[in-house]
Image (cartoon, rainbow, N blue to C red; front, side, top):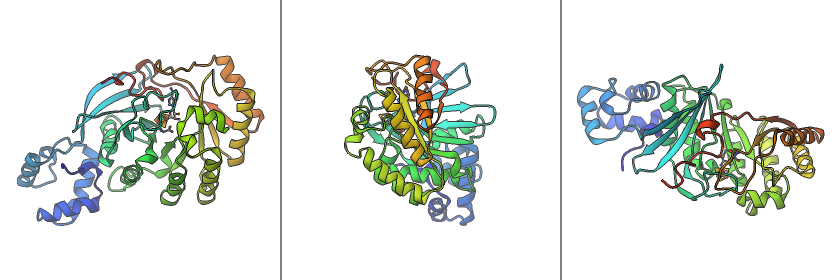
Length: 340
Ligand code: SAH
Ligand code: SF4
């Protein structure tokens, strides 16, 4: 199997470099070159001696993926479809603002969770992405403008691909590479209780976003099938353990579905739970996915819900929609390729 070079740390690369008879310092130099120049082939890696460069170019693939489609939104958002060596595809989205360049990355091809409102879970999970495949989504856009923030909000459940996600977080933070602060990385999860605890131990600086969507079990089990395994009570216990270890404010994500989770009672349950954890709530009006049964609420309904959440003590903002004209908004990834 081709080595996952973009998923290697400087220490991992040192084995390669030393086996090739080069001094150990070359490993860090190679790592820095990969992360700053994003070469696609070893032939471009001018920090390696020419003979080795040619030998490795003939033997190995360097970039784990190629961009096979690119769509640019009127608001500057760019969605890229990457194809990996085995032909599997995943999307990543670049979201520029005046002061930030955020990349929304996928952690798996497809998703096993199957939330009723999401395009990514329509066909189940096909496979986990490797750390290098996650890194390439970021580096691929880093060329255009330096990346400042990462959100694991593309396709897949990041905590079901925990090892590779953790490795990618550490590679992103490596000072010999991008040196991205953990505080600028957000991991969004549909609620894998055990792994939430583990993330708190392994990387307490990373921001946790819990995709809540309903604070009561009856509603949540309908929308997020994972709730039947780890229900709201389990999640609350995991969040309590997490909060005692981690001093960071967490986020609750809440997709607003006109027909499912927007009653006054839902707003009150959400506001109370968020207040208990000091969590910030992101209200996300449903981005239409035609293969799902859901309806987008009217603006008045969204505002009324936000007001009811605030009245119950919740601190909420309504998330603006970026890239909607190219189906790059949350949950719309993989829409065009669901049959591909
Ligand atoms: N699997 C992880 C991360 C990827 S989904 C998770 O569920 O958290 C990232 C976010 O997009 C989640 O909050 C998810 O609920 C939201 N989302 C999914 N489908 C959506 C849709 N159709 N409209 C709006 N948000 C959606
Ligand atoms: Fe998977 Fe997240 Fe989509 Fe649910 S919302 S199906 S967990 S990607």
